[in-house]
Amino acid sequence: MLSLLCLLPVSGQSLIAEPQSQVPVADDPGHFEVRSASTELEGGVYVLTARIEYRLSTDARSALQAGVPLNIRLDVEVIHNRRFWFNNTVASLRQRFQLEYHALSERYIVHNVNSGQQESFGSLFSALNFLGRIDKLPLLDSSLLEDDRDYRLRLRAYLDVEKFPGPLRLLAFWRRDWSLASDWYQWPLRND
Image (tube, rainbow, N blue to C red; front, side):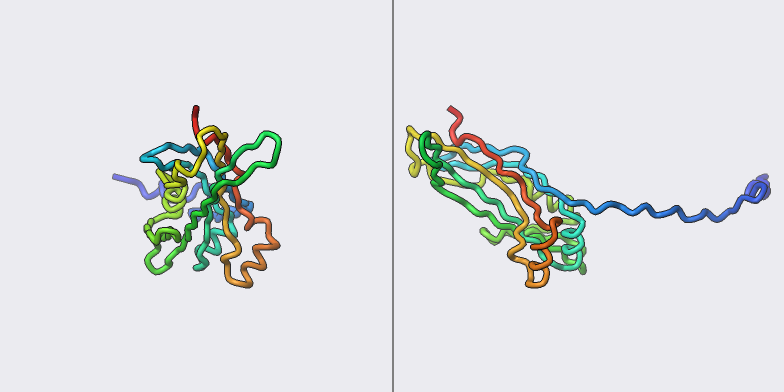
């Protein structure tokens, strides 16, 4: 038989746990980073495969939770390297995505603005992971390039604050937490 004495406090100890002091969590500045990128020639068209890490800042996550859609843009440029002159941008592509949070359904929606495709996710992590996987995105027809030239590609991802509503756009202009952008990631177009 169990004794009730084991439930009684011993020498002045309380049965009620005291709340632990809350240590303030530092604001996460977030970051975007292109981890890898490569191109392949498929059916006469160069296609892009890339992996990008997205981590939103604390302010960006708060705005998203409050119903502000976030616009993420990928810029891809094909550059002709010139030896004794400035490099020439041969082609450029802008791929736009919009990330939204629907509070009623508690779902994160990723909308590809270029194609109109839409995907739904149960967590922010899943939505950002989906955004970070670019698989076989058509870039450029190989017939538009000259065989004897040296071409490089570069890719970057950033949070497009120009698409924010007016007051938030002004706030984002002055706050460093909103300037989320990766560095340019460069690689040769052809792997000769």
